[in-house]
Length: 101
Image (cartoon, rainbow, N blue to C red):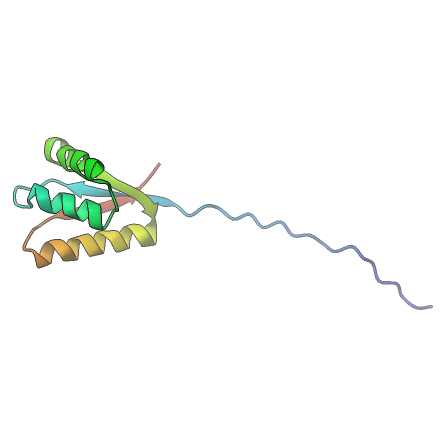
C-alpha cells in the first residue's frame, strides 16, 4: 500500500527582537567652539539649524545633550566620524554612547 503525503507543514515561529538602541551624547568642554558643535550636529547627525543650535546650547548649559538615538553600529560610526572631525580641527570634543532605556 503506497504512503500518502500530507499537505500540512510544521510551522516554526521565530521571535526577532528589535535591535537595542543607544544614545549618542555630546559632552561640554572649554575648547571646542559652539560653531563647530553646530556644524557636527548638522553634518553628522542631520539636525536642522534650529535643532543644532538648541542642542549646542543644551551642551553648553547642562554639560551634555543627546544628539540622537541609533542602533549600536550607527551610534558608534557617528561617534567615530564626529571625533575624527574634531581631532582634525584640533578640538577635544567628546562623544559617548549609552543604552537607551
